[in-house]
Length: 303
Ligand SMILES: N[C@@H](CC=O)C(=O)O
Image (cartoon, rainbow, N blue to C red):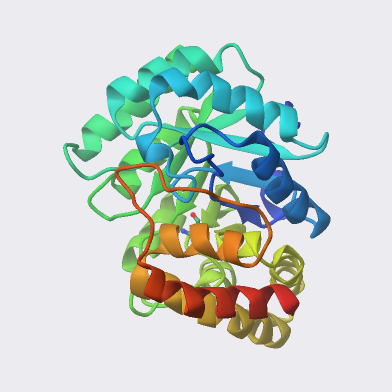
């Protein structure tokens, strides 16, 4: 596992940042074997950065289970893979996890976002205290405009507390995004990645000059997502656009039913790894939705 400090933008450009689900056994304990299978599937497709966050449902992980998660990620990681765990979203959870991260060698960790109960200035304070306690720079996850302001993000970056920013504010038209325009005017775009999967990635990277992208569907079809990233970086937007279309059917189902849960089922139904039951407060999707997810996942995997 990569243990060296984050070197942006090179580290953010070398791989699509995969955001995988987390496999659990029937008793909800961590399934090391199935998680290792999923990691190997992504790695075989060229992925070398894996961010365990929302799709892994780390919002709901017990702090008592967190050290076992960190150990497992370390142990199942290929030598050259960069594993990024998440903390929070609540302040107290993040502070307890900050102490646990000190026993490991992860170069950075992401604070999961929540709008309730939080205020932008409080989020900035939480990041400062997390960095102070863990000794790690943080990944700032900007998922909603109300979570933290571009000005506060700038102050955190200027104070050397942020390794990179995951920008994931959903807009009907990603090209019309005054909030992102403001952010890139205040913060070096080399530190910012698009955080909403393949669909807005071309626009975010081409029109706003940001650096890389995170994705969930990449866990099913890593090679094509990597091809898309390389096409964008090479300025071959026609090729990138063609590939983006291939991801759309599964992404549309995610948007329709639940991004986290459709991906959770898709990885299992495509036969990549058994993701097992969903950890509460999530729950599995109804059986009647599974055939269309299976079809879309298998078709994407077969591309
Ligand atoms: N939310 C996006 C990227 C991950 O954060 C996805 O799941 O595709």
